Length: 308
Length: 308
Image (tube, rainbow over all chains, first blue to last red; front, side):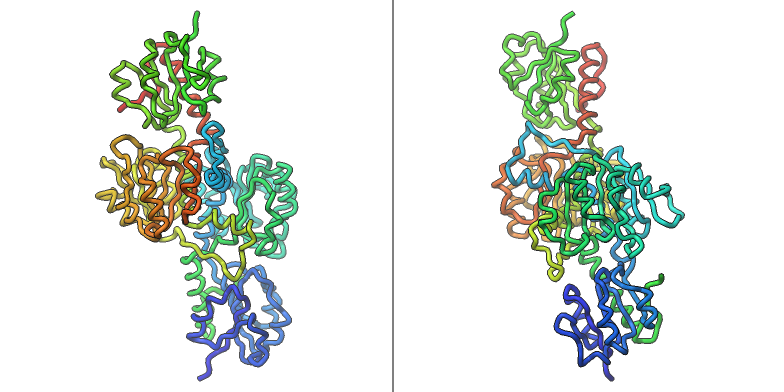
């Protein structure tokens, strides 16, 4: 019996190969276009944030399934895929706790100036006379953009730090925290804005210059969602001018982000898209991806189809 | 009417001067010994972690009050002061939330390798192919050494991150978290050990080589209490050998700690004794110190006397 052929789209997913090889014939796009196997490939495995290569997809006549390894799938044109009869899966709700952990870590690192503190100790510039006094989380308000699994997990953590939580999203939801009337109002009313919503073409640049200025000179912006949501040039200008107090970013307009873009920008904490990148989270995404592939090839419903 | 004379002991407390000057004649030890005012000085204001200068105290015959600006007072010989008839005040329970915030920030920074991540982005060594996968907080256990105001505030935060909390202290307490039978058992049974107890001569070197090794190669040590509690040489050796997975320190055997001691030590997050150093915390300590001084000179009981 021949095994289904599966194509892995990005080199960063190379660690999946040995697991997939136990059940599938595996092709790796970075080793060259799978010209000879074009008729055999029935599923692709892709990182959801990477733009899907439509011309390539059109050369795979027997493709049935696009399996996103990740929870996010902003790189996919869902309607285009559906129009081609492709099934779509992703890995939701397995790493939201890890992402929320990092979000809270970024809040603390930015507010309490932890990276600067670390470098101060190591550089020998720490002196008792010029002790650094930072802002406190105590008495502050956090605004969460997008109250999905990640946003709700951030809210739960924030409350344990005595932060007053409110949120905004385009759709009202039954939630224990107040819903701001607009994103701009949320940015004005809170000290810390955490971006945790799903990214797609409709919310590109959502955190624009006006929202950034509304966060204000004592406020901070934290983004653990997608770089596309933030106007990075406006953010960098606002950090330089002091129009915003600080920022902590796990995601960028392009990844890896060019370091020269950030080197002299003040009051900044950077993280290499590490939100869900834990042994725990990656293992859970791997298991779910394998389960979706297995379900599909057994003729059963996908465990976690993309549902919008 | 002459105003009481007050002596500020350390230069790091210089910012208190203008506030004290509204009510007292203020002397600053770093400007020279207060020889002419020796008979006038009725109170000193001191940082509780700094060893009290006993020979100086003996030259102040009319000293009545030692007011510690801080919550901790490990620099004081309480019995010696009491034997001299001195009253003692400190500033407890005003910055424990801030210290617990930083403790949790250190847990996150160490576990999720946040400082390394920041430097990776800035140095341009971030690549999608060699993505850093860190440990997760999810499924882990935290052990808290000392369940005072800080320890309990850390426990509350840790639970919001789904961490399983237990604790150890020399005295049993009514608490919602299980009490480990010994410190060593706590270190063995948990992934993250947070030191949050009060320091004094009885617990110097409490976190010794044996405890550090019990935390183990996948565990981390976080200290927001006092440097005296940890055998720093043993910790550095264990970090080098991999006998412990990581450490995050806000306090040191000597402060400022010599940077050359830490420069090549792996898996380390450092912070310049910033736990309580927030605008919120410092203001609250200032208010309490002024209130204790005012109460004393009005012949009223101290608001927050040192009570052991």
